[in-house]
Amino acid sequence: MNQKKTRNSVRKSLPLYALLLPSAVLLFLFSYLPLGGLVMAFQQFSPSLGLLHSPFVGGRNFVQFFHSYQFGTTIRNTLVLSFYSILVGFPLPILLALMCNQLRNGTFKKVFQVITYLPHFISTMVMCGLILIFLSPSSGLFANIWHLFGAEFPNVMAIPAAFKHVYVWTDVWQNIGWDSIIYLAALSAIDPTYYEAATMDGATIMQKIRYIDIPMILPTAMTLLIMRAGSVLSIGFEKDFLLQNVQNIMSSEIISTYVYKIGLQSMQYSLSTAIGLFNTVVNLAVLLFVNFISKKLTDTGLF
Amino acid sequence: MSRVREKIRLSATDRATSILFYLIAVLMIVIVIYPLWFVIIASFSNPADVAQGKVWIWPKVINTNGYRELFQQSSIWRSYLNTIIYTAMATVTGLLINLPAGYALSRKDLAGRKWINWFYLIPMFINGGLIPTYFVVRGVGLYDSPWALILPFVTSTYNIIVCRTFFSSTIPESLWEAAQLDGCSTIRYFFQFVLPLSKAVVAVIALWTAVWMWNQWFNALIYLKSDELIPLQLLLRRILIQNQSLLGAATGEAANEQRQLADMMKYASIVISTAPIMCLYPFLQKYFNQGVMIGAVKE
Image 1 (cartoon, chains in turn purple, cyan):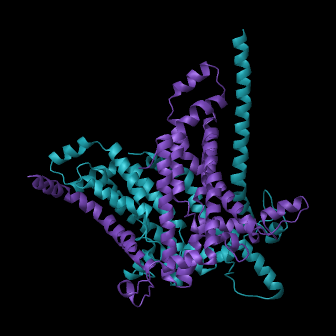
Image 2 (spheres, rainbow over the protein chains, first blue to last red):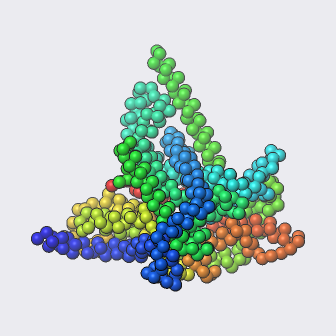
Image 3 (cartoon, one colour):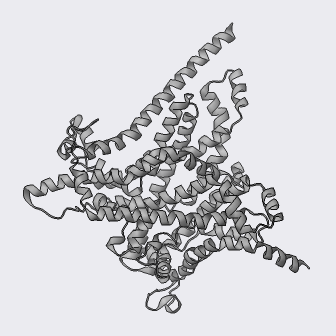
């Protein structure tokens, strides 16, 4: 009886399955099949033998990575960039949204928003091109500004210690506006009677922000923080890779750039896959952990 | 009396806060706009003026050699055209793949909805990574085909969730019940009734896919071999990052001149590759914002 009911509802869902089919096929091919390919992290994979016939070596690839001298460097660089990005890139859009929300002049506010969102649409490639051109020690914009004050501008991209600052603050420049949209949306959903009541009680703008705005956007902020934390080891490959050069490699070699070099440049497929898998597992663990903590503390979570 | 005075005092504080906010806002506008403006004026200036710091607000002398030289390169035209074609291909594919999936998942009567949801969610959190994906893409014969940049990556769980949220919150279930009574099939109903009511989400998905495709380069780097297939962003890598001159080698005085010309071509190539999206964006902003907002709604 129950089986018949199930069969009936499945039959009724057939057209819906048809709508799902294209995406499901693509996901299966390009997301689930590669998951099977993770087996090669435990093999001494050789393309000529294929996945089925390559010899298994257990955890040897992982051990090789943990013992390699790149292990410490790549992990440290990845974590430094990641935490620095969160530390700066997480609160600043919130502050911007709180401020933007107080701009009473409608036209000015609109112009302000359009302009601050604009850099988000610059491609990573062009962004890195801009960074290199502007920071050029001979003819860049910053060098010219420094020269106005009679100072010599250093070759910033050749200083390993400067890499993280360049990376993070150009990211702020590019994304602070865009990342604030979601908070502005949350702020605009606040019941205006709260503000009216606060004004009646003589609250200042700062007090309204402190006691109305911030508590109201806290759940949104927590959700976004969890998502960011979940990708703590997968800081953007593209920008890092493009800004990387021989001089700054000490602080710009991160896990993902290392995976690329080991895998597609030196063709050590198994080692590269093992490092990638390690990365994914750590990310997932951090995501689940932060989600757990957040659920305990603020009752907000992804799942 | 004291209350009134208090009010005046407080509003003075508020005025100061407000002025401070406007000042910060103006400062931010300058910080965002000036570098972009500088690229434009530098692309129209004498390279020597730019290098010596004589160009700040406006070109000293208008010089369009950078553009002229750039437009004489056939590689620019070809890669530009490639990017336009790929973007069109990706946008259409993205719509055809993600919208129907989002709709199907929004229907409560979908049998096995819970399991199917998980099937779509899992790839957001775990993936095979670079090498396994690379072998699959090669294995299905997409190597050196533009489809290698699109098919493996165009199914976006995030986009599908945005579609699902949109459909389940804006399309009333009674509409489907009525259509069903009239003997309308699910698939026809989706294309004939749901889509015309969903222009906003169609625009959101189309724009996101288009921007993603226009700006991507890494997949082209690893999956395309033929030089005539490369997209604009990859050509920009040669010009901007790898400092490869498109002009060929030269020596002595000519080399210096050529280096300056190469600098101009850098600015010019940034302008021509970024201008389309920058000019269109303010008119399309509404849709981009809508997308972020729909995506933020949790079910």
